[in-house]
Image (cartoon, rainbow, N blue to C red; front, side):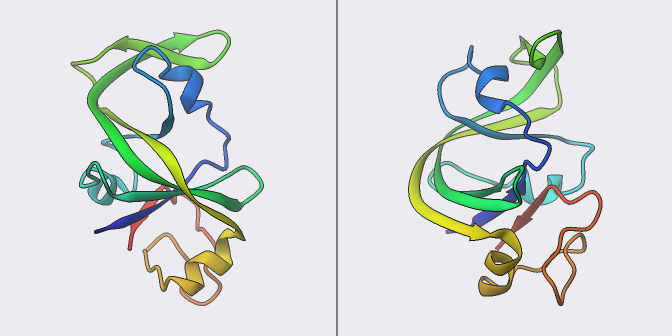
Length: 135
């Protein structure tokens, strides 16, 4: 089973943006963004770990649902809202918490030997543009 590390340091409100699709939205990514090749392979049942705005990983989630081809529209409160469930290039994953991690992300990266062109190999620090890595 694959596991995914994703970055939400921008504190994007996934739960609010995608609440019309269900509860528990964790992360989204557009096909043009770095990390798409990994993220596009995520499947229900696999695990995902989210780096939050404080650069920590608080929880690990099990993916319970995936929506592909989502199209968003601008929203004055949340930044975006779901416009359509087809015709777009966004994938969003939903999940349930299954593991409490409570760890600074660089330590998590090193402990799990996560490698990615957008992660510094020695320190584990994210480089500009990091979105997703599979491990």
